[in-house]
Length: 264
Ligand code: SF4
Image 1 (spheres, rainbow, N blue to C red):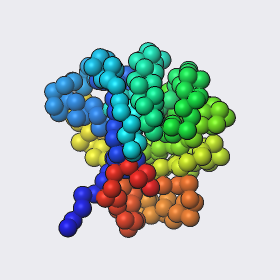
Image 2: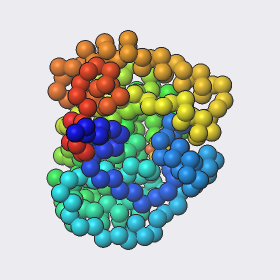
Image 3: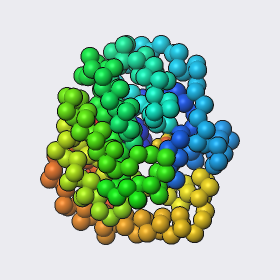
Image 4: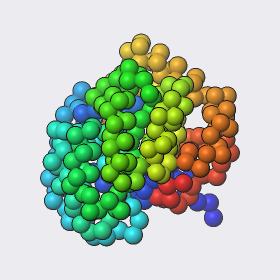
């Protein structure tokens, strides 16, 4: 019997949870934005306007045997921190394991670490850092923090004794070793590398059809061609802390996952 291949968020966690529609970070390549536009829940312009999902916010969770990735279709920032804290609390008090995925703001990570210190063992942070160049981050992820702030968040969580990991998905330039060099010693778990998937289609759906965006996307697609991915894999393949998303596994011939949430 053929089994379905697992990709995206489900490589990391078997369940996802969210309590907000829209995202102020407004990343150009955002999958959730493209889906919201496709199904007419949002437009390219109003994706940035967040709406709290009150019903989700007040939901009581049971204990799930696997893990939750939170959030998977929005992010945590100072303006929505209170709601995110409330939602996280609801998940944590039931004993759930949570993978907190974020382009992190320092004030938010400090607050989460302080508030949930007693749930430390139920939390694994995964901070998204696709480039060590803040100009590159600004172009692709205009509402998100710069590199220095994300690195400070990593160091802070690590110093407080939380489990930490990094997502370099999507890698946003051809110098991802610069991110790896800076983050590895503060990462207790893993650094994940992955390509930008369906980039041109996403940009068009998300309203970024301008010449500059298309040119930058074409540059990125060239950087993540097989002839560049294979040397990258060879450079890090023996490092047990470097892990590969499905987009790279299939280029280098690694087995693809068929079970959700294994995080390997
Ligand atoms: S932070 Fe995540 S959810 Fe928000 S716009 Fe960026 S990719 Fe989308």
